[in-house]
Image 1: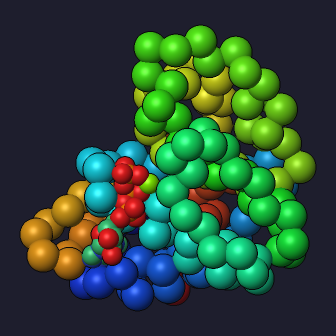
Image 2 (image 1 turned 30 degrees about the horizontal axis):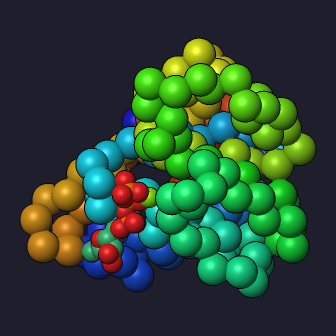
Image 3 (image 1 turned 90 degrees about the horizontal axis):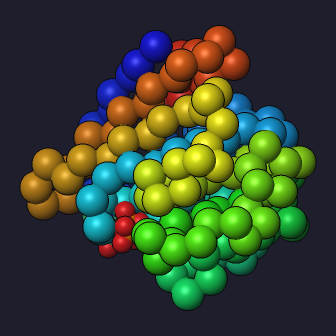
Length: 151
Ligand SMILES: Nc1ncnc2c1ncn2[C@@H]1O[C@H](COP(=O)(O)OP(=O)(O)OP(=O)(O)O)[C@@H](O)[C@H]1O
Ligand SMILES: [Mg+2]
């Protein structure tokens, strides 16, 4: 199942993240793909807001991963960008399919750690502040999310 929503600005992308947050459960794995500056981290910021996490989500540029525990569900945010070509056996698997929802930017760089069942979110820059955000599911669990997100 697949759904594409057009965002016309940062705030609309955040609102979409908020709407996804309400649908999340522990062990969910969500992959975010799209070019540098597409809006992946901005989207995760919306998810954090929807989970009532108070800390603001920044690019975990130098951290690889950040955990947020003060919301309605633990949120794990992995940015694998800096793991390209590196040893990826650094314990991330504990958080992927863990007790929270795990969002992964640049998942291709940790491909062996990605479970088959996951939700794909692809963000494309359409120019200016316009972005297409495509939700793609390969499992009934995530079909439910694709159906309801952004409604
Ligand atoms: N519709 C939009 N949705 C999201 N971000 C937008 C939108 N329009 C403009 N922007 C801007 O685009 C930038 C997106 O940055 P962000 O850090 O979220 O991208 P990213 O995909 O995580 O990049 P990276 O791969 O470098 O981590 C921000 O500066 C944001 O303000
Ligand atoms: Mg980012």
